[in-house]
Image: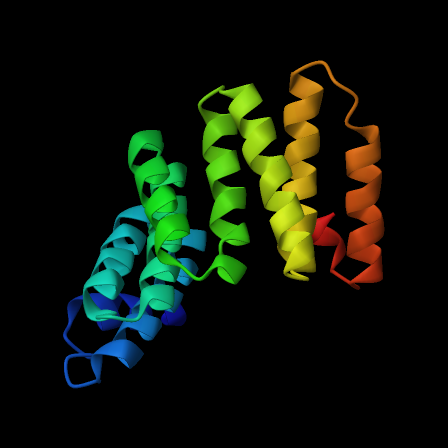
Length: 177
């Protein structure tokens, strides 16, 4: 609706041209998240790439934009590009922020059918998110890890139960667990 039209105008009509680049980059990456969820993957990829270009020397902002771009490439079925962007995000960003792109990298490996790799990446992501006290993404990592384990023929029960308990303890909405 209206929000989508505004975000599209931000991306394509030059409405952000006079805004300082770090702020413009942040606006673009957040807009990329919203339009991605609305299903416009092409625009999300464009916004994320422009956010990377605008982020300048802000490594965390570059990493965030590349992670968002990576998830858009994943949803577009371009697993090679998704993996590339997510690995760059992990390399670029501050260590405390790498748990989220690690979770998305695990989703790429799941989508590619690389189940042992998915299990390993998601187990590392879960550990990382727990250490960073990122309960939202720890819950997501645990859910995805349980999926990988189940698909590999391993018991996902303890992982999924831990995810539910963490989600409840963190008061996350049920949509996360």
